[in-house]
Image 1 (cartoon, rainbow, N blue to C red):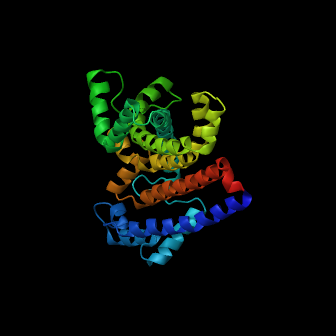
Image 2 (image 1 turned 90 degrees about the vertical axis):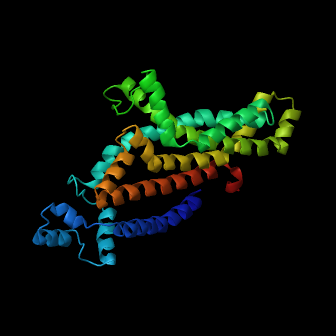
Image 3 (image 1 turned 90 degrees about the horizontal axis):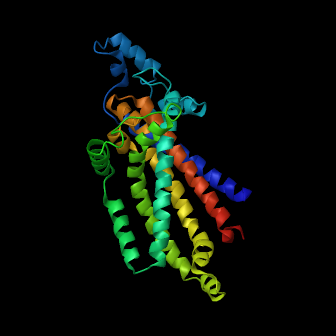
Length: 313
C-alpha cells in the first residue's frame, strides 16, 4: 500500500509542475498590460514603469515564472490587481460556497445515477431499462445553462417556490441556504447522474454474468442479496473512480451554473477576473482547481486499490 501510494505521489509532482507552466504560459498570451490596467485612466509612464518593475513584467518569461512559482511554493498566489487582496484569501473565501454546491450536486447524482443504473442492468431490455436510458440521454444532452433557466422560470417565476438566484450562508439561514442551492445543485447533478447511470449499468451487466454471481444464485440466495451484496460491491470499483473525478470536475466546471444562479463561488470569481484582466486571480484559481483535480485523481486510485483485492495481491 505504501509503495503504491509513494509511486502515485511521485507521479503527480511533475504533473502539477507541468500544469503550472501551462497555466502561467497561457496567461501571458492574454491581451492587455496588467501594469497599464492598474495604473488607471491616466496611465502615467512613470507609474506604469514602476508597476511593471514591481510585478516583474519587465523580466523574461523564465524569470517571471520563477518568481511566481516561488511564491506559490510558499503559499503566496499573488495579489488581485482589482481589489488589492491576496488571491489565496479570495480562494479560501469562495471555496466553501463551491464545495457545498459540488457536494450537494454529487449527492443528487449518486442518489439518482447508481439506483437507476442498477435497475437498468437488472431489468435489461425491459421498459425500466429503456426509460432509464432515455432519462440518461436527456441528462447528457441538456445544457446546464438552459436547464437552469427553465428551472428558474418554473420554480421561481411561475410557482414561486424557490429563489431565482443569490446565496445565503448555512450559518445564517440553513433553510434559505438549501432553498438557494437546490436548483443549481440539481442542474449540475443531473448531467453527472446520467454519466453514473451509464457506467453503473455497464459495470453491473459485466458483474451479473460473472461466475461468483451465478454461484450465489445457485446457493438459493434471494435476488436482492445477490444484486446488492455480491454484484454491486464488485461493480463499485470503476464507479468510485468516476465519482472522484466528477467531483473534481464540479469544483472546476461550475462556471456557467454559478453565473446563471448568481452563486458567489469559483465560477463567478474567475469570470470576473477574466473580464477585469485580473491575471493573478485567474492563475491562482486555475492552479488551485487543477491541483484539487489531480489530488482527487490520486485519491480515486487509492480507493480503487483498496476495494480491488486483485491489486493488493
